[in-house]
Structures are given as C-alpha cells and as structure tokens.
Image (cartoon, rainbow over all chains, first blue to last red; front, side, top):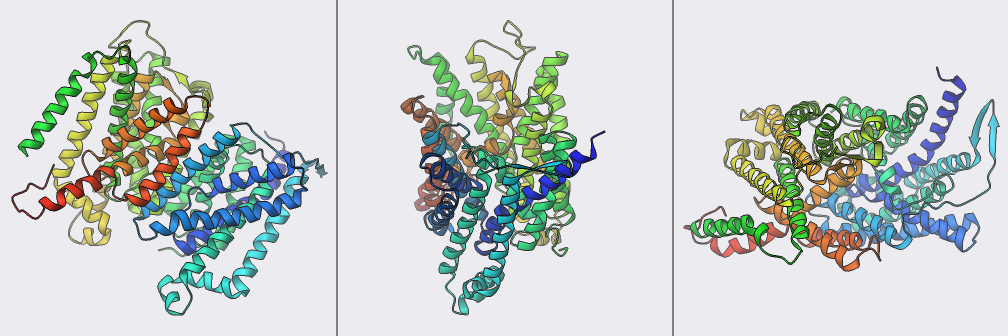
Length: 288
Length: 332
C-alpha cells in the first residue's frame, strides 16, 4: 500500500504541472480555434525557446527574468515565421497536408537542434529551495511556474475579452467568413494569433526550463500530451483545455506514483481515447 | 496498356536480376537499401489503403509494433517459429484494429479527431512496450534470438539475397492488394463514405462494416510489414517500430509519393530512403542531425509545392494531354 502522503504529494505536483500544461494547451488551442490547423510542431517551438533561455542564462549569464522575456519575444517571432512561411501558403489545401507540413517542421526543428546542440540534456541551474509542507516536499520552481502560468492565463483571458484585437480573434474563431464581412482582416488576425500563440510557447518554455532539462526530443515527450489535452477540452475551447490540463496532469502524476511513469501516461492516453468516444465535443462540449 | 505492361515486365526482370549484378563489393549495401525500400513501401501502401479514403491514421506504429513484438517475443521465449508467430500477430492485430475502429466509426470520429485518436493509440502501444521492460527490454529494444545457422524455421538468413526476394514478393503482394481494392466495389463505397458518411449511409452503404474492414486490412498488412522488418534487422525497438515518430515517417513517405496512385507509396518511400542514405553518406557522422534537418526541410517544401505528391503530380502532368483523346486508357 502506498503511503497517503506520497499520493497527496503526487496530487499537488500534478496540480502544479497542470498549470504549465494549461499554458501549452491554451497556446495551441488558440491557434487551432482561429486558424483551424493543428501545429504538430508547437511543443518543438517551446523546445527552441527553452534552449534560448538556457543560453541566455547559463552561457551569457543574463538574469532569469530577462531570459524569460527574450524567450517570449523569440516565441512570438517564431510563431509569426511559422505562419507566414509554412501555414499561409497552404491555408487552402487539404487538412492532411496542413497537418503534415507542421509535422515536417517537427522533424526539421528536432534534427536541427540535434545538429546545433547535440542530444545532451541541458538545464538552467537555479538554486531554488524545496518547501516542506505537512510532510510533503514541494519544489519552489514548480510553485513559481504554476503561479506565473495562472497569471498569464488570466492575462490571456482579459486580452481576449477586453481588447479590440482579442474580440476580433474570438469572432474569427466563431465564424471566419462573417468576420471578413464585418471589416476585420482575417490575415492580420491570423498573424496576431500566431504571435500570441508563439509568445505563450515562450512563456511556457521559461517556466519549463526551471523544472526540466531541455534536449532536442523534448517536443516528442510533451507534444502528444498537449494535442490530447486540446482535443479533450474540445478543440478551440479555451476553458475546456484549461480543465483538461489539470485532469491529465493529475492522472499522469498519480498514476506515475502508483505504478510507473509510463503507466501513468498510458492511463492518461487511454482515458483520452475513451473520452473522445464518450464526449467527442470535449469534456465541456455539448454532445453532438 | 501493352506499353505499360512491357515496361512493367522489364522493370520486374531487372528487379529479379539485381542481386546477381556484379557491384564491386557494394552489393550488400545496395541490397540492404533495396530491402528497406521494399518493406517500407509495402507498409506505406498498407497505410494508404486507409489514408486515401480520408482515414488519416497517425498511429500505424501501433500495428507495426504489435506485429514485430508479438513474433519476436514468441520466438525468443517460446521458440515459436515466426511463421506461426505471424498468424498469432495477425489475429491479435485484427482484434486490436476492430477495438480501435469500431468505436471510431460508431461515434463518427473523423478528420483531425481520428488522427489524434490514432496518435494516442500509437503512443499507448509504445509506452506499454517500454513499461513492460522485463520482457521487452524497454526502450533498449530486444534482439531477435539468433538461430546460429540459416534457418527457414527461424526465418534467419545470412545471405541478404533471401530477404531481397522475400521483400520483392511482399512488395508485389502489397501492390496486388491495392490494385484489387482499387477495382472493387469497396472502393466506390469507401470513397462515398470519405466524402459524406450520412449520404453514403442513405444510399445503403454499411458505413461501419466498410470502415472496420478497411482498417483491419490496413492494420494486418502493416503488422506483417513490421514482422518482415524485425526479421530482417533482427532487432526490435519501441522508438523505431511504434509511436509517433515512425507513424509520421510512414505518412510522410506516402504523401510525398502521392497516396492516390498505385506506385505513389513506393516512389515516396524510395525517395525518402534514398535521400536519407545520400545525406548520411554526404554528411557522415561529422554533422549529426544535418541529414535529418534537410530531410525535414524538403518535406515542408514538397508539401507546400506538390500537394498531391511527386508521383501523383507527375502522373497528372503526363496524363493531361492524353486525357483529350477518348481512346487513351485511364489506368497506368
């Protein structure tokens, strides 16, 4: 029998991981909701930004917060670049080709990172304390990541809710044809969305690098999970993605403690498959 | 047609004769590349049976892994010959395919959702293989237990020529299945389903039955391809035979060649393997990752500029002027 304190610790760690996963899922889901394309390489953009933070902080000795800001800027830039160079030429082609073009980007980023930086695992060594709370050991880095993730999520919500551009983004995701008739330029909206989605990848990168080491296959480790969270929450449904992040991270974290890390993921993925059949529109969606 | 048949016959004769052409010690290498092309073309063809009807699976690695690991484990632990092992693996894969396909069809999981569900299925199989590391060797993989001598029972041969001919036969078999399906009523039914499921059902097409049927066929052939590859390489690994990486590679090769044409998967696979080999030879071990980087870049460029695949686009280009004359045959 497993000590309940371990389970409680796993549950809290799951909660903390969920915050960062939510950030990843929100970025991907924003892009999907507006442009209607799943960026298979989204988490690989995060990987590139993680390297940026690593080099900024570890090699050039910049303070962490500047490294984080650089990562956000780079993320936004990469988001726009991906949209302009890869997505916009194939906006009209078959969905399979759109999916595969970003899949090609995945191969490209993965192997280019291998070429430039080899497969070594690199991490930013911040000396952050571990906090003991009621017999549980919690990493301070995870607490910070969780808090920042929640703040950014709130910021995204306010941006989408209370700014003109945010309203336009939501409108395009509801009906792209009608929006063009209302005088908003979908092309501008697409670019802004890609930039915001990329910036979210940059934030996530800065928060992930303080907990995990980065390597070229980081995207392969977190990518499938991120797509599944988006689908579980309902593609394009932001609140659903937020809730789904915490469900998945709890399943992985608790399953990992009770059996093994891989089994935690297996249970989460099987749960995902079953949920797709049971609630195709996402956990918060209406039944079709 | 007769001209096409003549070219086909000559090509086949060349392919049969290849192992006996003197190649100055390069023979082993050339055969190795060709065997891989045959096996992966066969797998790509199996994938395209589903892909061409809009069932874009991103998890065919699951079927590869299921097949390869079943025969390898049965041989390593129980000494069961891969011939019988293949029967077990095929049965297992068929059952598994039904388990995946039935709910997908029942709950109309299509498009993006189908892709992501199959992606999850592929990852589940990969993670299960890693989790059961006591038998499967986890992420280190597993070597097929050597029989010591050339053995038909163990399907192990020192001479690559045996595998070459086996691969050739397998590849031809894949083309035959593709051709048969292309000429059958099932194709029309599947095309109708791919266009609009509700409309297809309304004209009396049994949507669920056709979808499950095509999935099982595709999955079983993929498993056989996985077994063939495992027997040839004599080593199985969860990352090369299951999961998202290999699944995407299969899809890429097929889309690159063109999934709506008989030889599309073969052309795509041959090109991707040849490209990978050329880049590997050019860059060697001095620039690790460079070959793959160029590969990824070319994939993006191809998908943007040749959306219906290399072979598909080429065929359309050649057919267009001939299409005006009604006497011209429609099939290559």
